Amino acid sequence: MRSDKEHLLDEYLVTAARVGDERALDHLVARFHPRLLRHAYRLLGHEAMAQDMAQEAWEQIVRGLAGLDDARAFPAWAYRIVTRRCARAIRQLEKNRTGQKALAAEPAPPADAPHVDQEADRTRQTNIARVLAALQTLPGPQKAALALFYLEDMSVADIAIALEIPVGTVKTRLMHGRSKIRDIMKGYDDEQAG
Image (tube, rainbow, N blue to C red):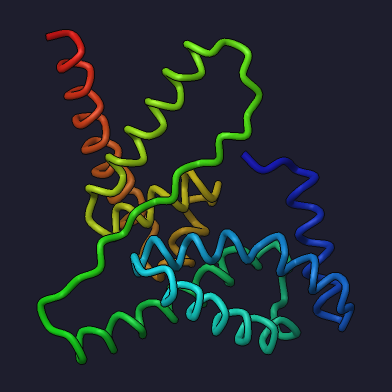
């Protein structure tokens, strides 16, 4: 979960970058590029393509930043730009290649957390791995909504803006995605009990 301080820092960086502060822009890119790259990867399932789309999105973000009226809207606005770039790339792929779809794989979380209780930590890591694996089995739209909500800490309203869908559709995708993951996790529990 991102803190209020982080949100305020982001707003400051956006505001400063809008008026031409290059250092603020560099810090903004450093803070948001990994998130936007993960989002592109989740949508595309192809690392090199995701890098290209994130880079192209940054070009558009930098060009349009001066026109962004509300610094608080930056995250949803930036994710929407990446979403559109990825959608355009997918349409192009579908024209060029029929019948092939890229399989997305969520990168494993870094294992840099301190190890206090190794057994509890192992169980937690196993559960995280299972949830991420379950996330990969979801249809792309549900996977994108859940990842933005839980992994990127975006609100339902911001996800609607980022994915260019109604708020109700975001809620529906979250509900169905959670239900499917819950069923998969229950299957793991049943396997261990049996």
